[in-house]
Image (cartoon, rainbow, N blue to C red; front, side, top):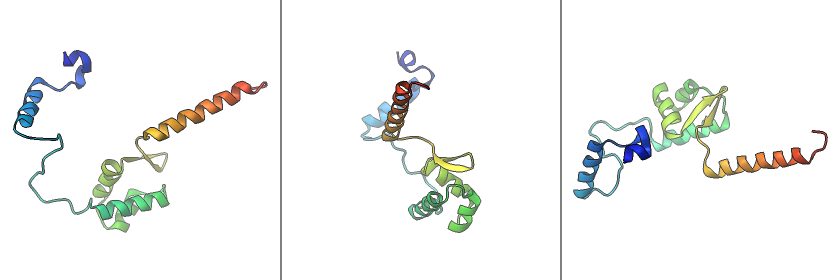
Length: 124
């Protein structure tokens, strides 16, 4: 039934049983548990804030320049851009990967206004 509804993105039966058991044992959310090991020292809130400020001031800045200025590795800087800030490079600029709901709505409104304006113009 789940496969019909969700296709290939449906959770497997084994995974469903695993999560069912976790919730039966008292788990209250689906967030990942903490893993053992050394915590990241590069993707701190302070570094994320610095990276965000730099890219908002200059959208054409390179990852290497940001990494050098902040004092972190290029890989950590790339992780901050892609995973934390959800940004990617488009036409030599860093832009957010996804539009939020309000931005999508505004984009639709502007497009509709443009269409209405074109419809009212006689020589267009």
